[in-house]
Length: 469
Ligand code: ARG
Image (tube, rainbow, N blue to C red; front, side, top):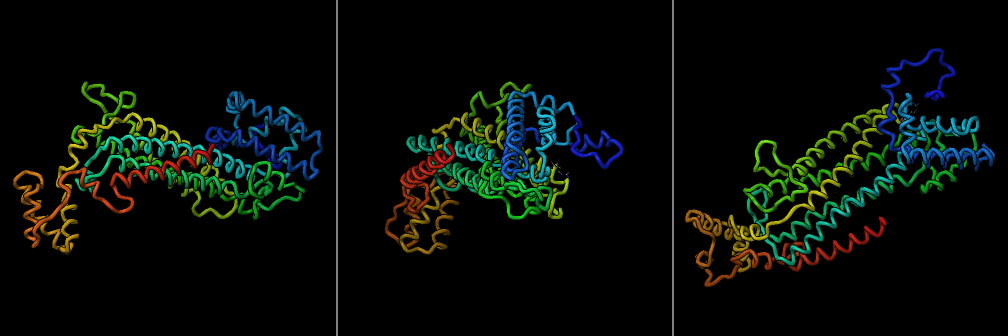
């Protein structure tokens, strides 16, 4: 059986090196089960249009079911990789012809690899988008669960901006801030899934539609698309859903990389906020004392690589005339690579994050270091009628003085600041617990607010889990 899907008008065999160069078989092997679905739907479209009879449809279906089994047990990949197939679609078609004989030759009636590839890729995107949404949901849920524990423990830390001590916050508040991007990531994954469900390209044929009476509605509904695609030329060259999922994947990994950066810093002895469990930490081959946060560094690197891969994928699309061009084979491989790598990376991120233990005492103890209560003091002045600028200047001077005496802000500073502002007395939080408790705005780090955020996120994540089940 020839590995080529064409040949009649050629007199010489193609250059083996060029055939190998043009093969995406290895990259698109994981599309195999989706191609079988797509091919079964095409059989339904052929039968629905009366292009094949019942016996032919049954034979093609049986052959495809057999291929499905061979894909599952690995026999298909092993056999296909021994031949020079251009892609998995051709390999499946060849295997069907091998199994079903001449009846197998009817499978490609009215079909081009152009609509076949486009449809198969959408089925793959739908599958992986749900897996990715589940992964994002699980990551968010794990942070929310830990936030509940830390809220209970009242763990505090010095929240930072520019990596400098800024204001005391609850660790639970930080953990919820880590959960939020993954809730959004799940939404983006599901949006990509919806895009991949809207239009079924099958029956678009090469670019212009078909003269054969294909029952496109049947194929679309068998594959659970909303409807057959509207414009054949657009359908065969459209890679939106794959790129949307690739984009959502890159974004999620980039989000993870930011948390990794925080955890890498926090696990350094200078911070000492977290200890990475033995299951996730790595040692040095030379320095016996080392305990390195490699998985977080690797996630960070995968994020950087994903950005490059994504721009590469967009690059292969840029400037392509709207139709099928062979460049799209590379777009496909790149999108698959990004999507698969993100799934692996997010899973590693989830596992490594679960191995992090917080040093509550150290965090809480340092929550007010670095004059993190200065803003509360300025706010107290403002609440008593001092302008924001004047309050800022007064507290700034008090901080400079305390700093020169190497001590924290204390009750005496409060009194001095009050007197300078012409007030007889002033109350302001003088410890980190009072500071967070005094926050009033919605979304703030006050324990009540964090509790409310927690409950809301819990509800959202539960709904998401149900939608994905
Ligand atoms: N191997 C190609 C891909 O996976 C399909 C080829 C489609 N059509 C063509 N005329 N070369 O994208």
